[in-house]
Image 1 (tube, rainbow, N blue to C red):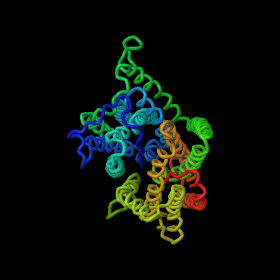
Image 2: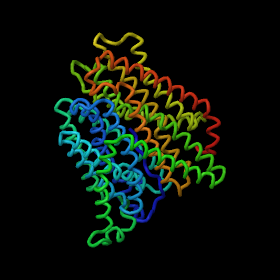
Image 3: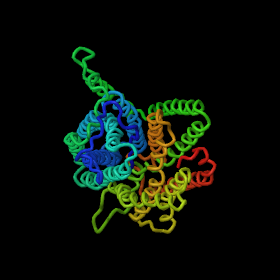
Length: 512
């Protein structure tokens, strides 16, 4: 459940010079960091709370078939990542990060409340609004964090570590509090609570603005607020255009294959641009663009399998996992909390581990880390096969909860080998003039991965409408078979990357 940040140069138009005042103590962190920490925590509380309940709400309340459910889920999560590219561009060139974040926060809250309409129309419309809001919010709040620190400030990495904790604390609360409220009181109460959380996050961000040191303002305030069409200025037009595109997102959510086609076309264009710029820029840039594209492919492999958490793994937990803990059954959506919990436990340990390995010259290169991350992901799925092979399945065809405990642990350690490393790699491989575009390409690879994740999820039992027709034995057999295949294939792909890591690392020309 990671999130990127923008490492663009400081002092961009619209930002004021950094003030050496009480807001920026040299031995601590800027006060603005903590306001942004809580704003982002509540936003992730909203997003992951809704995501945790989505598949269960579709299959159990709206009685949507598995296949259609996964198609909707895949289109939604793909679009959520894809639109961040446009939201970041609008913030960079027109709105500034603050206005973008505020617009995004209120849109996401409105979207959550729309879902309370109680049928598929209101669900899809609410999701379309959330997609629009997330596009404005997700990357831009992180950009403000980066701008609180001058270039070369040793506190920056530590600051982002704190911010990353906020992200995963929000995800942890979402997959416990929101998920359990939805499980015990009704899914509509969970969605409503997620919306309230987003409102809290938006107001926290607004009230903390005096601590942002003048950063995140519009690059050209006069241009933004100057009337250009009658009384309408560019801000008004941007908001109207945002609202106008919501019906398009609604249609795309209802037509998953179209999303796949659009992602494919966009990916082809992006690959051409990266290769063109690489070959034009000489041997070093060419090689770096080639390795970047190759690692994007492996990034898609990882996230396509990892992102089963909110879809097929949640239904697996609902149908074939014994979720009784100390005499009380937890909700299927609540089992998603293992990932953010492990991130909170292991995140700092991994940060220290990489530093210590570097000091003794044993830090694996980036392709090696990617390969090892994918191997761990595959081993996580093989836990399901191991539990089944050991005869630990109950007479009612449920597996013990520790199956998911160990599966998510291996998925999370795999994530820590790959996700933060990949984000750092992008900013190092790309020339500064291309950083935004290359980061956009990285986001698109994650968007594509989420779309592929939906296709993989459909293999776990999509022929059973709403999960009602299949017996527990049938669903368990299907889950074990598919997860075993996914485990073996991803372990194999990871090992191939490990074997090829040395020659591939040469293409990076010193980037570590």
